[in-house]
Structures are given as C-alpha cells and as structure tokens.
Length: 128
Image: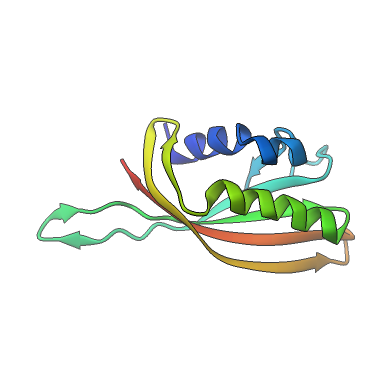
C-alpha cells in the first residue's frame, strides 16, 4: 500500500476536515464533476538520508491545495488541514508517522476558474 493511501484515510477521517469537505480529497487533480470546497494533494519530493548503507526515515513534502469558491472558505479548509497535520504523530494506514510538520502556507486566486485556494505544505516523517 502506498503511503498516500494511509494519508488519504487519515485526512478523510479527521473530523474538522470532514465537516469542511466531506470525502472530497483527491490526489493531484480535481475531478471534472467535483463540488467545492475540496482538497487536492501532491507529493512534491521524498528526500532520504543515508549513512553507511543504513536508510533513515523518508520525509516527503506534500502540497495540499484547499480549494473553495470564496477566500474565507478556502482559509477555513486550510485551517483544518493544518490542524490535522501540524505536529501529528501516529498511524496513517499501515504506516507510523513520527512527526508531521506544516512548513509553509500561501494564498492563490485563479481568475480563469474564479476559485480561491490556499496551499499548505507539510513534511511528513514516517517509518516504512
């Protein structure tokens, strides 16, 4: 099972985020029939540190795009993503997260779609 499946299951079960978006959490792309608000997520990178042939914990950076038709609603969704991930340690599916750290946040407006999104970046250290 890829780590993303555990990440999705964790976010899909997080009460505050469920209240905001239900199960509308998607990898990378927004489905054509989707309703808003919703969250998309993308693995940006997966650095691994090595020392004398010993592998250390992977710690991928994920980007979570919190999409909504209003700025305030996008901010509310981002607040729940932040609450779910910042300083979290515990299970995500079959994986054990040592710590998840929210590293960055920025606001974006898409004039073509008239949608707001708040981008939340998190680094998640987990055991394989």
